[in-house]
Length: 360
Ligand SMILES: Cc1cc2nc3c(=O)[nH]c(=O)nc-3n(C[C@H](O)[C@H](O)[C@H](O)COP(=O)(O)O)c2cc1C
Image (cartoon, rainbow, N blue to C red; front, side, top):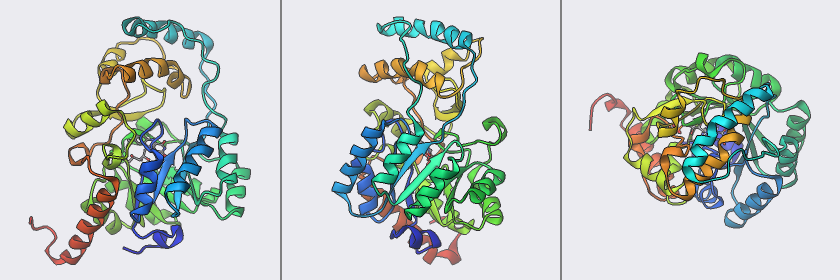
């Protein structure tokens, strides 16, 4: 189970818990995965700099092993004001339905990436990962100088090559099965829906940095398959979403544990950016919207009050239920158990390699 990346990251097993912004990756989850020999990751994209600092310190209080902090590379949305106003007006019907204030004022659409990254630098985190693009050169250089391992996200070979040229130490190859937001940044998500099985070996052939397979990987079988495709590690999100330490909403966890492989769709309706989640009433209803959906992160900010109100009353139909296509394999075990099971199953499989293809 030792790979180029386990050595570089100073971890025991090539198993990364995916960063999952919006609550699932609690300090308890991150620390539990790192303590179990994998690499926990804090999804910090939506957190204020102060919240990031506090979370990092909390994780450090629970583990002395390496872990990652993940941020969203900012984009320049180009949505005209009237499109935003139109959407905000349309969303009022859901606000009415839920008894919350209409036309909320939104002071800012997203946190400052520079300030967030500054905290990652100051707090001496071992690994910095990111998605949605490539951070400015000065940030990559500062991370590098501090010895922080830098991990970027690609959904195509061209994106992986661009990340390597920008100086990352490893690339996450995010296949189209993946739950949550697509990391695509050089072409539209709709044009880059490449499955993990096809994506990983093609990226491996075109970059020299280690590749981390991600998307639809749920257990030791996915780990062995990924290593066989040339990956140096796996990054699993959905597999940890319903774990005991995950901060995902109870209704989200229940949906994960009771849904099948055909339950998800890719939608831009919640945030303005393509993301895979379990089909909800909100997704169905908003598919009738005839206007233009504002770009990320504007749409994300516009729907926030509706998603939060739905969380308060445990109504999954208005929540974003991000999940990948491996749903049926999700379990509600402790995170350490998920790491252990994955590694043990992979080790057994590797031992019985001569019998692969036969069902046990
Ligand atoms: C609930 C959820 C939130 C996510 N948030 C992030 C994030 O903040 N940053 C990131 O790089 N990837 C994020 N992802 C994508 C994961 O990094 C990873 O690509 C994905 O979970 C892999 O697919 P799987 O869910 O089938 O394991 C998220 C995924 C999920 C399910």
